[in-house]
Length: 225
Length: 225
DNA sequence: CCATAAATGTCGATT
DNA sequence: AATCGACGTTTATGG
Image (cartoon, rainbow over the protein chains, first blue to last red):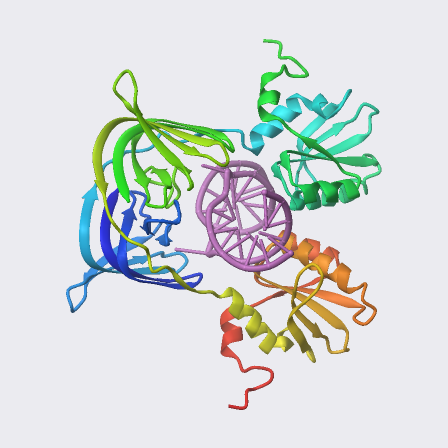
């Protein structure tokens, strides 16, 4: 990883055209070949960047300023840096990162809810996760206490488009005489007010999930070992 | 801007839970208060980060390792860094960045299509761009060769939610006796297969736009100067 | 490699 | 504060 602090101007030509006037910035060049140009704000987001795989060509202008041309072969995108005043330039060997362990993303929620399907109501039973349809997999398909089919759409944050998604599934599933009638459950850690209104309006029930609680309790069908 | 290269382990608790085992990384602390932890890959995306406004508290463990606790007051998110071996630590004054000038393709596309409305078909004529409705402006409203109203939704990338958006407009517009019947056109530089399927199922036609071609040809109504 | 859905999405405008 | 739409979205995953 190479860290350069320098006054630079940048031009990007690719999916759009962008220009950065000359100013002091951080140029971050990673071992994966990526280049990103950071100001002292915008949180972790760079002003400009180039994703790998890309190649960097260094040249020198007539007036002595260095020019780095970063090219992304596949897409034809190009990033051109003119570098005036280098305040800092250091390289560091970091090695391969052991990587990030995440817990609490949608996949985990789905696992947990499938394991604790009675969270949705007394007598519920799982049919299957990722139930395939022509327009994509339904997160969870199950039966309610009365044996009727229930389609569950799962989100970490329940927004209006999640309700739309579930609505599409329900429409399709209810065309199948073997499954019909299929009701819908919109389950999320947090459900936005408007999403709740839309869901209710469409006869879809909303369930707010408590991840920590789900993780804490015993599974519906305890393991044998 | 402070750049620290150090062996560190990181724990994030907030919207999800995440853990990074001890390894050498870049810790980037910006003047805006943000903190981000980078490995030598993943392009410009950090392994972990905290957005401003947040506060950093430095303390020292019993075994002498430094612990930085980054707290986001509003959301309750927390980032805890244990720092073992600092290889590099430097600070740099960058000042306020003059900022990025973008010349987007996006806005231009609407202009071009409005100018070349016959791209959609023989005899098409523009009613207006950004036609206002109660749920937001329709990108382009026009008439087809037979004089019937056509609503156009325009995207750079045509995804399924663009079709949903257009569907909502169409439903609304078709309640207006003066406009009815209104048909829909989904126009984008690239249309995803699933979006195309959904659009077709709803009687919405799809048009793939060629930005360069649109820019190259003469306008339908040539300018007088 | 293409298509699709998730993301600690982020970011900005608007209500 | 919530919503909506755009993003050079990026990233992971499954076919």
